[in-house]
Image 1 (cartoon, helix red, strand yellow):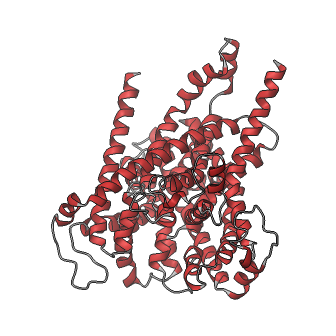
Image 2 (tube, rainbow over the protein chains, first blue to last red):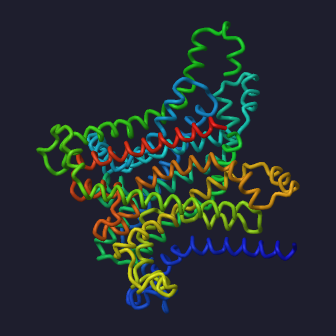
Image 3 (cartoon, rainbow over the protein chains, first blue to last red):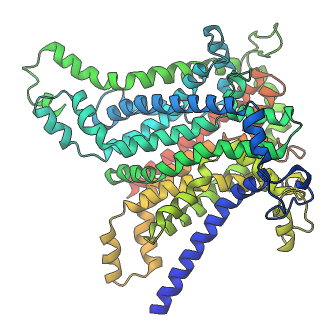
Length: 277
Length: 307
């Protein structure tokens, strides 16, 4: 029995390790290409690590390209989107979690339908609507579009967090004379901080990587976010892969950091929702 | 709300109105935004399917009825894309689900360093999709990536060639990239569902002499079933619409072997700037996905009613 248990444990750890290698290997390759000097890029293309590593791609990208601007723009867009979505989704998620009202079914249906259709379909109409408002080629326009795209899923996510919190808490506060909104703000919201963190991180990562609409709505370098900027590396520097991968690695850092911080709340939040069924 | 329900008669009209309006006030900002930025453009987009909309042609824009749909009925490339979509979506969802479930089961057991392992396993999800596509295209390239050489060494390939340029195998490239990228989503939702299963059920089953396989089939699976159903439904719809990886890795080639409907729409819209035709294809895809979802929901209802 002991040996069987031991064999099982070893197999379990090995399986986890195998998956981690599978998950991280492509990222390792990205890193490897980004530190390979240009003259070794093809001759040592298949080696696990170049015989000579360099940070020159990184210094070039930071000092001599428009990448810092892209980075700043992306930070502004993803940050504002995450905050706005989380506020709107908390309010809407709370309504879906705590109230029974006639339109609830229709609101859920509307939000589900928004997850169904190819967003490509919206590119032309959105461009035509935003252009007279002066919201094309502007970060504000991007924030508005991304916020709308992310609100439905974030609302469901927040609803599942609220569902995990017993109703008695705000009912007690309301008997003591608080309005429901005050109970929501002062009692329920602080309890959902993990959920808020999860939603913030989830939306931040999504907005950080969006390419299609950024490509269509932004034309100059000044308002370009980093996915668009990364593609300009292809044309401007005759596909300098080393620089492109260095920029890619730099751009991965905020998204990954954010994600590492919030991923356990994501699991927790979904659990809380599932408990209530 | 319950407070209000105790004495409805004593409430003045204004208070009752405020109570009824409260949920609408909470959801209004989100709803207004969704309607303005998604629903209105969707309706406009649907109208484009019946009009001649070409972005660079100032004389386009007139109403042409069902012409786009007639053209679509004759479009062999579209039907090929439809078949490719089935293959792409089916294989991606199936593999993501199987590996996601295995990963969730592995991570559900407590062990030292589980938090870190979980974070690392979920990391691919944070990688921007087009960067993931670029990166996998590199890995499959025999000049600068190791994968063809490994597959050759293991006897999977006859020669270390790029599978992305092999018409027979090309679709596997984006599928593998998609599986790598999408496993965490399944793993996160399934892990959450696993952790919600009461632990004493397993203990009771063990005492009754149930083995691990039996416990999995009679406790774990039934508890996971609703989550599995809804996650697979959502992911199927989402992956059929997901063109980023294919556009970045193969652009639909070689010889349209990896062209799915979503990437075909993208090509029509951005390469040919024919938004009318692109909208018509998108509308067909939307209808197909709605029918699929409806069938799944109905199936679920009948299964639930049977119990």
